[in-house]
Structure formats: C-alpha cells, structure tokens
Length: 401
Image 1 (cartoon, rainbow, N blue to C red):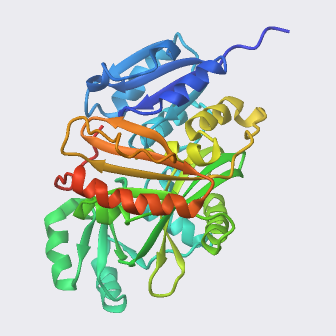
Image 2: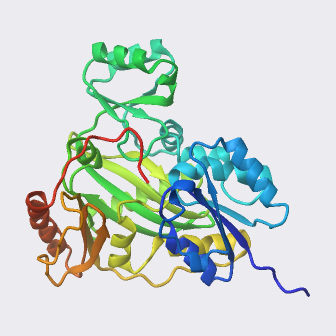
Image 3: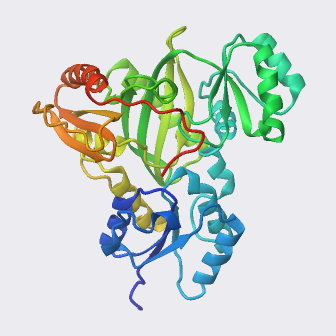
C-alpha cells in the first residue's frame, strides 16, 4: 500500500495568535501553511514550523481570498482549513465549502459567530438566555421594550467580547440610536441587561463528545472592564461546587445544541443577581483570549491550542485521547500599563507561575493547589496593579491585533 500522505493545514489568522497550534501540527508530521495579514509580516510566528506563509492586504474581500487560495490549491492539496481567530471564521468556512474540505460550514459557523443565531439555537436546545429581540421589525421592538423591563444592551451580532455594546435605559433613548445606525441596525440585537457574576467555560470537543472543560469566573464582568476600565482577573472555580457542577451541565447542553463536532470552545455565562440562575451570554469556537489558555494550562496541564491541533489532525477518521489533566487552581491578572515594560518582580509569592510579557501590559498567571489562596492573592494584586500600573484608554470600536 502507498505510504500515507502528510496532511496539509492552511491556518488563517489576521491577528497574532495560534503559534502553539501551528507548532503542534508540525510536531504531528503535518505541513503547515499560514495565511495572515500583511501588517503582521514581522510578527512572532513559529517560522520553523511553517512550510510557507502568505500575506494579504487589509480589507481584502472574501471572494478575492477564495480566488487566491483556490489558485494555491492547484499545486498544494489542502486537507484542513482552520481559523485561529474568531474574525476569520467566515473566511475559513467559505473556503471549506468552496473547496469541499472537511470541517465547520457556514451555517454552523454562524452559531459561534452571530450572537443572534447562537441565542436562538441555544434557546431551542433548552439553554436559558436573557430576554432578547432581533433589531429587525420595529413593531416587535416596541412590543419588546413595553413588556421587558430595561435597561437593555444593544449588541453587535458579529463582534467579540464587549466591543460595540451600548447600554440603553429607555425606549426614548433607543430609537435615535437605531436611526443613527441606519441600514446597519439589523446587525444588532437588543437584550435585557442582567446584572450578575460572569463565568466562562473553556472546552475541548472530539467527535461531538465533550472531553474536557474548565470552569472559571471573572473578577469583574468583561463589559465593565472594557467600558469602565480596571484590572482584568479570572480564576478557576472550586471543583465540585454548585457553580462548577451547574455550569458543566449547561455547557454540555450548549455545545450539543450549537453543533460543535470537534475543536475548542470558549463560552460565557452570567449568574443573575435577581434569581441566581445562569444565563448564556456567548460562545466562540476558538481558544479564549487574554491569556485564558495559559491560565487553564497552569491549573490543568491542558494546552487548548495544542489539543485543538491534535483533534484536527485526528479528524473524523482518527483517534484522539486527552492527556491526563491536573486538578489544581489558577488565576490570571492583566492590566493595561502606563509603563512600556512594567516591572512585576515585586510580586514574588511562590504561586506566581508565569509573568506575562507584553508591551504596555502588566500581567501574571498564578497556580496553587488551594483555590482560596488564588482568589486572595488576586484580590490583593488587583488593588496593587490599579495603583502601580493601570492605564485606561477609550473603549475600542474595533478589535486590535
């Protein structure tokens, strides 16, 4: 029999991320092609793991990218197409469907990219969501604001994190905002603002089976940090606690409802102050940003980028086995810093596992067998970070690389 051919991966990202995914693909014997933005030509890519790199100009239409990749496919057989960032998922799904490469298509992609589609799909799968309304029919919107008490949040359907979210306090405030949006208003949804504590669940899925999940809690809701400034923190939830058990079950139902076959996911939920129930906020078929991967790895030994790559290599015909996971606890603290290269050496507790090195950012990853110790350190560190490092910049309208 002929020797099996090495798989060729086309990795797409217009942001600097996913290096460990590409390294693991190469370690698994695959050929790795990178398609990225021209502005990232000099970024810190794992060039030793790449067989070739292709650069595209900013705002290149998807149709032109399809033409370029189709031309490339004349001489290189592409077996997998993977979007390493959320904003490249539509491009990757379009390419898969055009070239008939296995993986997530456009319909399923929208359940992880479009906040309206994911809410409707989650709701149909029995997952609780805050009351929401599409911004399409104005009669429906009037009924909604008359029967669902405010305040509400107006959310872009296809942005990430808290980008572009606007809080609305009255119907009189809503209509001028929609008028200003004009033809773009249908790209938003209106949702009841639910005060509460925000959690995230980071998962690994292989052939429809949820094989790993890590439940964590944000110190302050990400929307509060994004819009009001502050120090970003997250930490592993106590295993076996009521919150841990409830969110594992809800997350399992969510992943099944949204239809993720293989890969990783980052889902966010809010525990409402009013009734103590958990409500679904959003889910992405990607590794969580802001060093969440490093926090999960500190607690469990599981690197989400690496396992994602191994699952994609295995594919529908392969066999994937999750490595043994630790059951420790970790925390993450990150802040925009006034200093170009902030010095965190004074934070010298033995639980400091990793010092984050990023221009104009101060950050640490903590690791311990004691969950309460992690929380206590984060609380004290957050106060110190606010005094020693924290800088605030206006909320972004668009993501940055």
